[in-house]
Length: 286
Image (tube, rainbow, N blue to C red; front, side, top):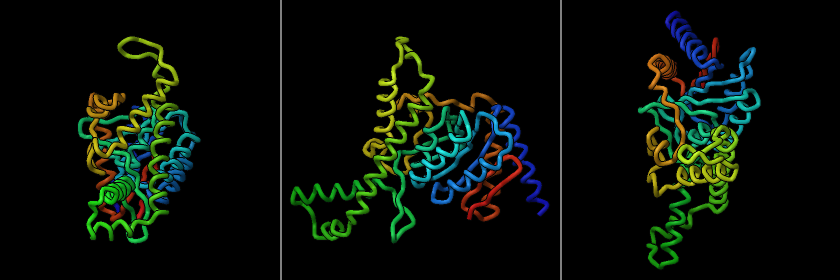
């Protein structure tokens, strides 16, 4: 118990240091974005007294449900004028959509995001990557139309649930729509002139850029895998996104790394699948 108290004191210290450096409230979350995560995050935000205008959200997640992400973003924006995301390690799938709702995104050379492939619940599994499921169905349909479908593949094709496929399509469309909306409203709001030609940036230009980002992040032929790592350099060069490199500030990098490492280690020590921390309070998630 004493050891745990010391760890929690250190977590509070790192949280305070990061908050002072960023002039913001700090919330850290490690875990899946499944049903219930939105409630934990809401409760965490609600418990912060005398809120500042800015929230820094330290995130590590393998992904989850896009509907949960939408509720999280609504909660954050209800309480804060500015929300920035720090990704010390990874934020995949629906986590990438969540990060794209930020006014700023902080990563370093080690940090990665992932293709937009939110997960859906199934009767026989906890969750499956939505796009992989849909693409397999479309591949089999194409083979059927070409007359090259095998007997085994026909059996697989007939097992697909049409209602479930529709749900997957809707999840995909919602993911792209939300990402486009949030990029235009938050990430691109201060994009006033183009960097090279110094042309005035219009709403139409912001919307077109956001659509391009959404399309590329949703292009499975580009990334090939649900868990493909997309680095800060790729986001900057291939998606033309502005990403802040926290590694350029040695003090900030040390604080972020130490805070994140202790948070994840403590979560694993307690045997929990998720963990939320704010100043003076932590919530283990089983």
